Image 1 (cartoon, rainbow, N blue to C red):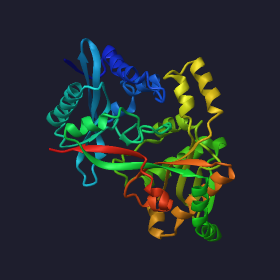
Image 2: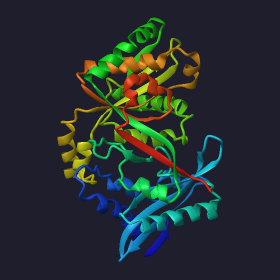
Image 3: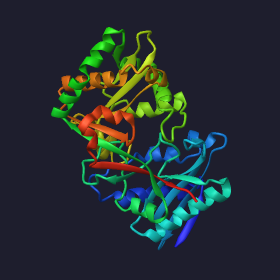
Image 4: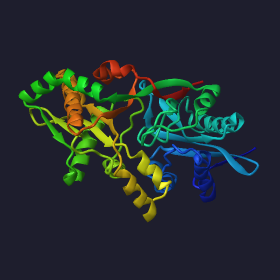
Length: 375
């Protein structure tokens, strides 16, 4: 077996990218990532590489002249554990069903992180940070995938565990039907009404003033996500880039900003159309035919995702019940739109927000895991 290590070598990078497409090509449910987007993330122009203190190395294993396993080790100077410990990350992991190949790239990545940067705490899978893809799916492989859901081979978690990684944090996606939505809307109706009576406002995301809305969203997410495991700051220009990609999926009427009685931004809940089938139809391309296939399939998208949300630390300290009130408001809007099926996506175990979902929070059909390795 040959092991190649590199950073920005063009041919090696193309082989690195190509391995992912080769492994999943026959999987009909797979939602291929945009190849251009991957090429951008692996090019020197990508913002991560230009930040002082950041570093990375790529590892690609070959057997019989063909790529069989890959990963990217990265050091992000902003990425730290909750106790302040610097964290090294291993992401972009893909491998054939061959543990020896997977072990080869993982061992090389761990050795580089420890010898070159002294990293003692390692997380994976994580592509640079939480903004660009992380976690393995560990349960739910037979469910209908949604766009943005972690996607991987069923044996990847086993490979990581055999190599010595342990589960650090788990998440679930909850499936809500019409009856559950009606029950959840009713459970917080009084709280929502009292907030409005006390001067709180619920305002939809304004697509006509997209840049202004994105700036407000960046501000509220920066504050409400600051305590999340693995949170790192993201600049407004980079966040705008992420949101420009998500713009066509955003459901503006149901996505809601919350303002307190003094007019301060207090929280946000984001609802997106699941465009998984439309993105799948693009087959990883971005040319004219790919865009036409996307438009054709996007018109059929019915499933909605309650995808992101949070309240500011200042609002949380007030104990005003704004989380429950805003949640009720958004669920009621979903039902008014005729929605009968919603995915509440990627909710961390132990997160207080799970209490908002009542008995629905016990749904563990879909599970995702971030792994950690220490000496």
